[in-house]
Amino acid sequence: MKKALAVLLAGTMAFGLGACGSSSESTEAASTEAASTETASTEAAATTEAASTEAEATTEAAESAAADLSGSKYLSDGELTVGLNATFPPFEYVGDGTDNFEAVTSNENNVTGFDVAMMNEIGKRLGVSIVIEDMDFDGIVPAIGTKIDCGATGMTITDERKEAVNFSDPYYNATQAVLLPIDSEVKTEDDLKACKSIGVQAGTTGETVARGINDSAVVSVKSFNQAVLDLVNGKDDAVVIDQVPGEAFLSQYSDKIQLVEGSTFNFDVEQYGIAMPKDDEVMLNAINGALADMKADGTYDQLLEQYVNNYEAE
Image (cartoon, rainbow, N blue to C red; front, side, top):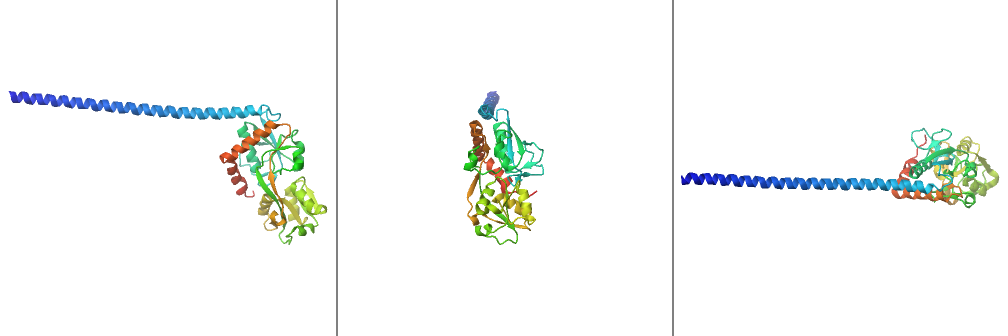
């Protein structure tokens, strides 16, 4: 009987101990699960808060940019009309329409290129719509503040132009070069002086350079397309043009023309800027701010790589 009772007691104790152990493990598991759930909830809340903070910061930045433009005589209507001359690849030219820019061209041509992409991005950052006005290069500066709001067309910053317009901070360094017939032996400035006709685009620094070499030989036309075609067809002996656009035209007519770099002629380095009205400091500061941000976050370099360094004639 004692033995049976002992066995019974042992069994009861074992059951009791087993039951206690199971309860403890369940409690620990529940606590762990609760802690895990709390941690996940905390992390989710933190992520949501961070996303909310980021969204608020973006909204505040956009509202700030919009507020900054409210005092602009030309941007307060939410639209920026940009003048350019689309015969200057790879900065601006008529493309095949595959870029899908938000910028709208007033004459419905598919104008593309680095300057168009740059202004399209600036428009996004400032919260304004971009309208492209394709026009004669020598008419851009006189039209700023009347027909157009600004000019972004590979325009060199010069003291003479600064008397009429404000310029953004420089966004590209350039130099002039010389396009020649493929069999030309022109190698020096003295050789250029002996040329009977030197093609240039009217109003450009290329025209200024050419007139400084041989004013009487300069043939001024409205577009670089025309100047290069005149060279290809044997009408001119040379064309003075910015080096990168010169290389773009060379890629189209490599069997007919050659390019001599500006360093051969000791041409000076030039800097491109966006031309704006002199009476709108708000626009100047806003565009300079957008340009600085684009350079800081890498967007500028991406556009440069896409549109300039990897340019292929269409």
